[in-house]
Amino acid sequence: MQAAAVAEHLNFRHAATALGVSQSGLSQRIKQLEEDLGVLLFERRHRGVAVTDSGERFLRHIAAGIDQLDHAVKVAGMMAGGELGRLRIGLGGVLISPALADLLGRFRESYPRIAVDITDGQRCSLLRQIREGQLDIAFVVGGAIIPDCHSKQLWVERLVAALPALHDLAKAQELEWVDLASETILVCHDGIEPQVLDRVLHRFSERRLQPAIHRFDVGRDTLIRLVAEGYGIAPVPESATAIAMPGVEFRCLDDEPPDSIPVTAIWSPFNRNVPHRNFLEMMLRRSRNGAA
Image 1: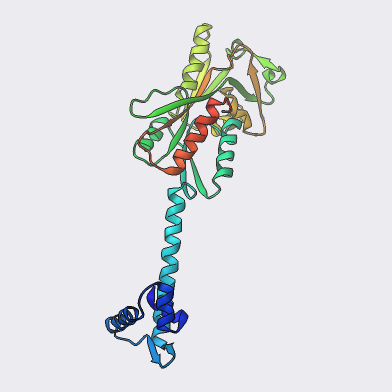
Image 2: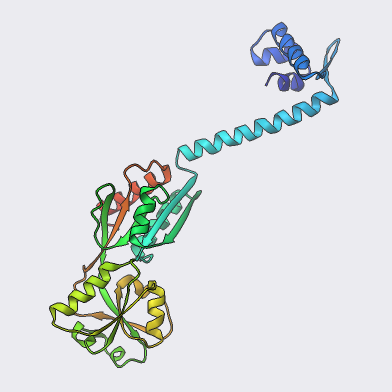
């Protein structure tokens, strides 16, 4: 800003030298600026200039504008470099397991200025939001082959039984599916984790068992609360054991494979959000190294 340089040096010759322009050219541009504004910015003196009151006010506003522009440029640069921005994550029937917690923790450590938004939702709703650019990535229970999206199975979980702490079966350290045949089985029926429901129905069907199955249109935490209230027993992914709820015990199912429930990440190949790109690179790198 040429006027700012003149105000700093209080001398046209010195300001012109600092700017690398001719003194006459600088003097003419300042004169034209004063004519355009209709105010006198500088009082010309024999050995220099003095800033007028109007000039001080003008320069103060210009300085504020330059500071705002400089800040905007820095913010834009940080966003372009992925140092600033927002990462939007959807969870479809997935709890923040140790594997996911470690991934998120390392990302936040590497990019502390990135805001991480996490929301729960039904699988179909999360897919719609990914397609519409409202979510960057979703973690869902079960496999996923989505024609217009990319996906990656990250880890697997086994089903465990959540049961009332005072239930007779809670006295055993391990159970089998046949032990649950005479119990009321609680499952989520809200579209969040249909793979869990399908797996439960399959496990009983292959053993030719027909227990009473009660489907609730609720989330996982509410389902476990119903277990605590004595409504029945709920087969849930092992990550649900992280939910500390009084009156609930978790028991392994001895005849349940350890890899029965896959957890899959889904994202759009058209997403250009830089924090998403950095998170994706970290996630895939850790998956190749066997960390996720």
